[in-house]
Image (cartoon, rainbow, N blue to C red; front, side, top):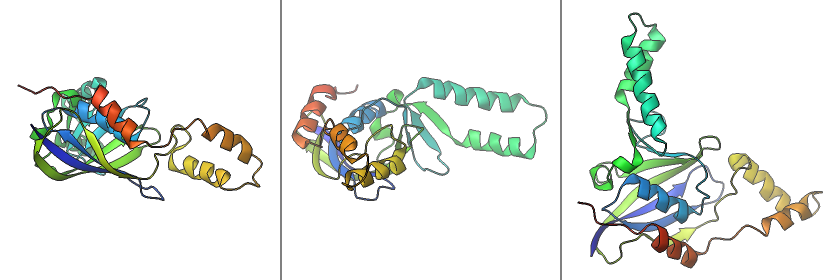
Length: 214
């Protein structure tokens, strides 16, 4: 039996509800949580991502790319070395000092989740798919060493089409038989697989099985 966390992850700014409820063993790190979310949400896992405790002024940021950790430390060190700073640079220095940036794989879930029960997950820095991740329940006797989706609503948007606005344009074309590109978009959309929770749970078992942490 495993201690586990039940989360709801909700896509923000979507015109229709898109959310998933899933359980994941607690004894893992944020990189594995990222891996699970990519499957749970049915994203392509082809862009950078990060977890933050706030979207406007985060104090915690866990990143997929270790170069972001190095960049943060380098910019902070550079500002500290300056003998004279403008008011803007002073504010920037204070802001950099307040934010902790860490590699996802070096942060264990239990060290953060139970004290920060709501986090924000951003996928694709260009299109900025922002999600609210909420801890709903701590499960003491979860029987599986892998995550599982238990409830869901809404299809995941198309990627690389210009974000939510691009998706709305595509939906408008698909819903308008008189649009000159309607048939073209209908044909292209046939390649998009709808959300299939049984397949999602199979992939979670296959790729995100959790080993007990020491």
